[in-house]
Image: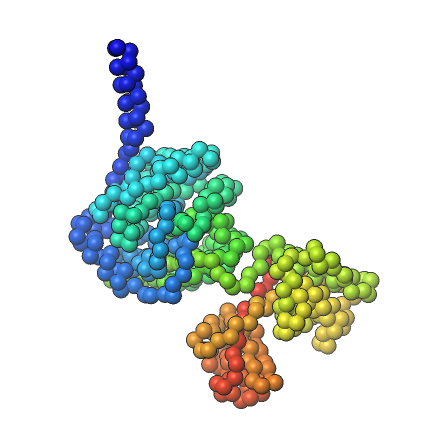
Length: 485
């Protein structure tokens, strides 16, 4: 009888141990944000109410700042206001301010607490991450004092109430291969059922003027959805030797983790808001911290993967060599060409020799498959550009190839839809047509009306205001070369 009683006690003890969990208490309530529940509720509700409104999207990820609410909460609220659906899990990812090791710590021993109540941690997923990857562990010191995730919770609690499960992850490494491994482990969870929130501030401690430059470089690089472009932007800022700049983004490892999950996929990074601490009445323009809000969602916009760009450059190079050396047109087996490259699209091929233009010809009319356009335009650039002599075999080793693919045109009804530097304009009126590539407006320092009006007058020949009763289309140019991939 006594042995049975001991067995029951043992099972009860095991049950209690399995279900015993530690509540992660607030670390920065009362400093980064108020610890008074009614005040916090009012503040967050007001922030969400007053934030800008954006068109609805099915959001997969947010990028938000994590400074004290008096500095950055109005930026973060802009991103949070765009949420419009419930998620099974919200993965909160930030980079450690307090500890460093080769991996990431995921909180799997209990829930998080804020003045608004407790937030449930999906300990099942958290523990599975630890089981599935040697780079995921639990280290208490990574979470105890860390503010980067905690300051996001009152927003999520206000939006979702108790219907909220989080997976809190603190990245404590700057090792690139480890970050790639972490992103691979997280990738199966990056789907429409879950939301990923990346917590990061931008530049730390430059002047107001320098911060605007540095932070624009980072936000613009994120829009490109490329880990390589993001790392290049970090390096560019560092190489600029900007006085007092300590970092371009304290959560750069977390941003990189997200980019490795979204690269070469149809995800759009949209910048929603930018400010820095000097925009607050408590800030100082001599020493600021930057804050950006972005959202990430699937897009139906045309894009090319790195592999597809490499394929087009290979086709261009082989076409160039075949034309110049063998005087033949390069023949390609269409069955081996990627599906997207068989779509009818316009394109330009530009040849450079020792960083100087050596030929450039293209077509706007999408009347044949893209890969065939690349063959034709490469040959034409080498042999038929009237500004230059034909390319000779001796020059080939010094020729660099740049490809510009023109995305499918989109008809617009308002000039407000045109973004200078991003969009090219195509105007059609009766049988007359004309276009300006995206870079023309930037080079000429035109505003939208000047961009369209000059195209209407100079390229279409219907006068500066002729566009007003013509059909307007926009497109983008995807420009790349071997060095940029």
